[in-house]
Image (cartoon, one colour):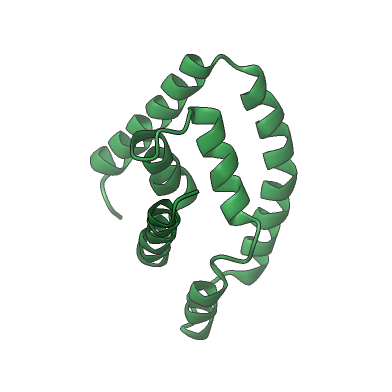
Length: 124
């Protein structure tokens, strides 16, 4: 792997971290599309790489800041993490069994549906 490619992966991590800190997003919305569109990975490889990035406590420093500011439901977050731990196993099994193009279209549909939900829902 070239040094430039390593720097690009690191830059993607930094950008994802900033977006994660600002919006609470990262893996699915930033990392996966970037890996497919910019790094030319296939959909499954991009999803697997994104999950690999999540293995370490990547959000720990940001989470500490939110905790210190009183803006964290720690119990909820831990329960979500436990569910994510189990769900990722079953989700990866399902994903790996799907056709590449179908998976890519499902992923794109999810992003569009989320974007429409955010655009069309009135704030409370």
